[in-house]
Length: 481
Image 1 (spheres, rainbow, N blue to C red):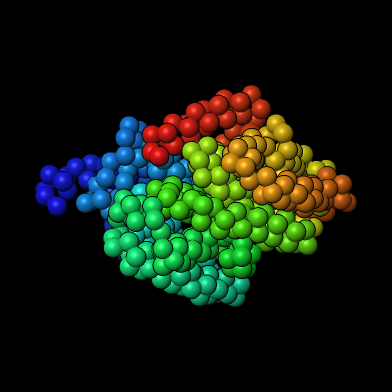
Image 2: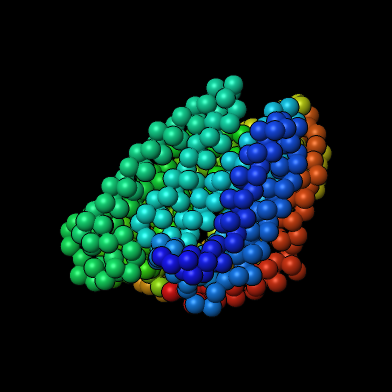
C-alpha cells in the first residue's frame, strides 16, 4: 500500500482515530494522576464518543469506500451503526460515572476500557475481510470481559466475568474455526473474493458459514448461544449491563448483516434456514424464560434475547427491506433498554439499588413520574402501539412476510404476546402492589439520559424521530448494498 493509499485510508477513519487517540492519551493521564483523573476522563470520553458518532454521520460516503487494501469498507450502513453505537455508549458512560461515584469505586480505567470496546465495535461494522472481522470482535470482547468483572471484590461480578470469558473464548474459537474454513474453500479472506466463491458453494464453505454465524450469534446473545446472557447481566455492574444490552448488539447485528448480504449473498437459500432457526429460538426462549424471572437484570437479559430474535427475523428476509428493518429495530430498541437501566439506577429501595421486581412495589403511588416513564419504556419494548417499539416490530414483520417467511412471523407473533406478559407483570407491581419504602436519587448524568429517552418517546417528537429514522435507514441500506 502506497503512502497515498494510506493517507486516503486514514482520512476515512477519523472516528476510529479519535477514539484511539483518547485511549492513548487517557492512559497517560490516568497513569500520572490516578483516580483523581476519573471525573475528567469520564467527561472527555463521553464527549469523544458523541463526537465520533457525529463524525461518522457527517463523513459517510455516497458510495462504499474500500480502505487499507480492502481490509475495511466505509459506507452509509456502517456510519449509521457507528452513530448508534457511539451515542449508546456515551449514555452508559454517563450512567457509569454516577454509579461508581456512589459506590466510591472510581477508577480511571473504566472510560478507557469502554472506549476501547467501542473502537472494536467500529472495526467490526466496517470489516471487509475476515482478519479485520476477527480483530474487531476480539478487541470488543476482551474489553467486555474486563468490564463484566469490574467489581473484582464482588463474587457475582467475578463470576459473571469468568463465565463471559470462558464462553466467549468458545465462541471466538467457533468464529475463527469458521473463518479458516471459509478461507480454505474460497482461497481468500476478502469479502468480494468470497462472494465469487459463494455463487457455487461447496460443503466446506457452508460449514464455515455456519460456524461464523454461530460465533456471531453468541455476540448477539441469540438462542441457543444465550446461556451467558442472564448471569452476566445479573453479575455485572448495572451500567455495564446497560452497555452490554445496547452497543455490542448493534455491532454484532450489523456485522452479521454485512456477512450475509455481501460475501455470502449467493448462499441465501442456505443461510436463511439457519437465521430463521436462530430467530425463532431466540424469540421463544426470550419470551417463555422471561416469565419466571424475579431479578430485573435477568428479566432484561431475556428481553434482549427475544428482541434479537425479532432482528434476526428481519435479516432472514434476505432483502434490502430486511436490513432496513433491522437497523430501525435496533435504533428504537436501544433507547428503551437504556432507559430501563437508568430508572433502575435512579430508584432506591431501603437505601439499596433496585434488584428485583418486588423492589418496584408502589412506585406508582410514591413517584408517579418515574412509574409513568417506566410504563412507556416497557410498553415500547413490548411493541404496544403507537410507541417506537411497535414500529420496530412492524417493520420486522413486514420484511419477514414480504419474503414469504409466514411460519417465522407466526412464531414471532406468539412470542410477542407471551413476552408482553412479563412486561405487564412488572407494571402491575409498579402501579398496584402495596407501597414500599423507596426514594429517588438521580444524578445529573442519569437525569440527562432519562430526559433524552423521555423526549424521544414523547408522541409528537416520536413521529419526527420515526420518520427521520426510517429515511436514514433506507438511505444507508440503498447506498451500501
